[in-house]
Length: 200
Image (cartoon, rainbow, N blue to C red; front, side):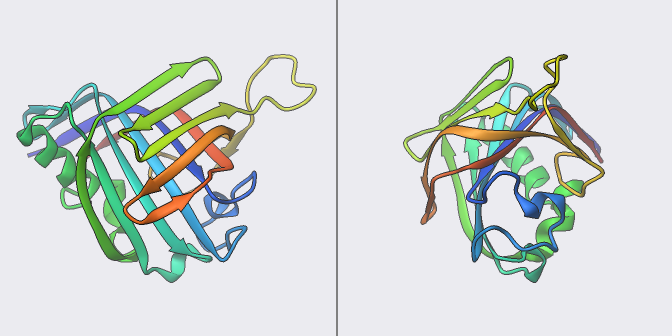
């Protein structure tokens, strides 16, 4: 059976603006580790005949300084609003078991920290994006409009390898409190993507 999902994406990590890891996983992060939250807000989706629209999945990870060294620690939140069937289908997509972009990252994960169901709230307003996941994750990011850009268009990183797609909008965290799966940090660097689309 085939599947497709589309929606918006947000992340914040422990690196300084701009995160070197996003330019290339082979570049070292700002610190001796990278701690990151990846949030996929599925606005429209169908996985093997199951509608998964209007649901959100988030991954919390800690990696070595150079991400391609592997041995990532990874925990996943699935929207509490999802039924058991929807959660199972989303788990298949985001674990890479059903193929797609996450399948390529699977070999880098050394320790699975588990999957939890939690209430996930996503808000988007212009350049501002915020995510709240239970009491574990609360952050707000703002897309960066470069000085002197009269159009108001935010800066973008293009031509990259990233599960959300080859282009991301550069942002920074205006508020950040993350403590989940034993991973705690205050986010600084951030990225967003108004539209991502996967299919397999």
